[in-house]
Amino acid sequence: MMNSTEIVQETFNTSMSNIPRLRRSSVVTEIERLKKSREQRRQKQAEKKEEKEALMNSFPGNPNWQFSVMIKEYRSTLDLKPLKDSDPMKQCLITVCVRKRPLNKRELAKKDVDVITVPKKDLIVVHEPKLKVDLTKYLENHEFKFDYAFDEYCSNDTVYKFTAKPLVDTVFEGGMATCFAYGQTGSGKTHTMGGKICGKSQEYKGGIYAMAAIDVFEHLHSPKYEHLKLIVTASFFEIYQGKLFDLLADKATLRVLEDGKQHVQVVGLTERVVNSVDAVLNLIHGGNQARTSGSTAANPTSSRSHAVFQITLRSSRGHQIHGKLSLIDLAGNERGADTASGDRVTRMEGAAINKSLLSLKECIRALGKKGAHLPFRGSKLTQVLKDSFVGENTKTCMIAMISPGMTSCEHSLNTLRYADRVKELTFSSDGEPDVCPDFEQEDSDIDQDYPPEAMVVDEEGTEPRSSATQQSNTTQLCNANYTTQQCSIDNTTVPPCYQQVPDKSEEELIESLNVWRAKCSECDVQEIEVLSGMKQPYYEKKGIVSRLSQIIEDRINHLIELNEKVKLFSQ
Image (tube, rainbow, N blue to C red; front, side, top):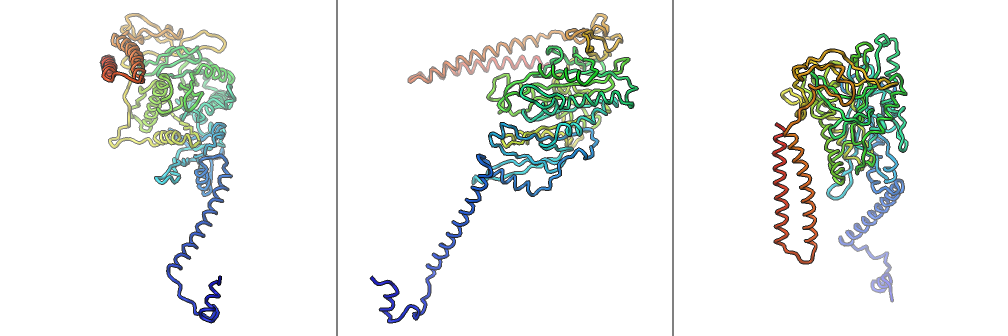
């Protein structure tokens, strides 16, 4: 069989080179262009595949390696200037700072992605992973600016230097200071305040509690303050579901009341005299052992209470308060979704925690305007800290703790937005600060003069002593004479003028709550029986509907009755 060249030679009696080149068809040209384009495209795809495999190998086992690459590229464009110990300190009435912890072992095992960047000493960037409609992955970078930003390489010493250390000077100058750690459960609050956690033990010498105690005793014996002859006392209590428990007295229940001067008093609080740092560490160790903790979806060993450790300076003569430093390890804030899988107690804990944290934010924001109303009665936490909010010489420091993992990105954003709102200190257009309602007013209308009291116990013994000797002017209210020596004897003694008279509406409300809980349990059992009946091959639909309707109606009737009791109690 002849080929094309032989056919041409035989037909035209000449060679191929002598035949004029025929004009190529546009179709042939287009086909060749498409072929060339396809080859180039395939070559690029092969190169991208090789590059993708190389990147995947650099992040082995990480399903979110694309986000890791994007974050790495973003960080490569930054000029990092982290906070240093030599940087100057700011003088602020309210200091708001953020600390990022490193990825923990659990996050590293899950190949979690670090989505937090600290490019400057006062800047935090959160790389929020997102998906487009076409499933293309991209990052939304959120920037937050605060007084200080601590990256994962900052030690507790550095954090203390810029946060709680200036507050010690404020206390010795006769002021009230508060430093608290806020953030998601498991973000490092207890590590920052109490020290490094090693298994089930904790090294308290490396926490803010211990470092503040060291500075307090150094100031106490310094020539500048030695002439004041001050006594250092310490107290430690927790706030759990709106109730106070003394961590230095076997978790005895405490009461928060107001005296005639509108000073908030924690009745029965144990206040021990301490003469050394070791004595303070022993109190911290004992208090933390008694602190309430629990398990949540976010943290198996979550602190479920606010721990308040107070160092008070008193004059050696009249035991008058010279200054007070409150160091607070707040309970971890959580979304409702994190506690939804838990039991009823866990959900109630989460609700109480979030309520108190909201009240704390509102009080701190109200500090930005002198003379503004402080909604400190919004929760027991803010009520106890009233003296830190009211007064000319008060300072507050907030340490917002954030977790770096991608799985905690939403929590970290919520924490930073909370801290950002605190730092803004904005007010409405009419000049009034945002306030929350006063939920609880315990004997706030007492207009008689009653001296502040606290149970003061020496290290070496348990003999208490009164912190004042002035005669109380409440005999007309109490219909009996009552002296101040009687009010500080033990944790259970309460002045008659402060004792609450049993309220009939309160008893009815408690009874209605018990009836409601019992009825709910009964209805739950009936609903389970109905569901079991519906699983049978044949069941009577009308009977099922009738029974469910009756159960729902019973619930509604009891709920209406309970609501009436609540309204009566609120009056």
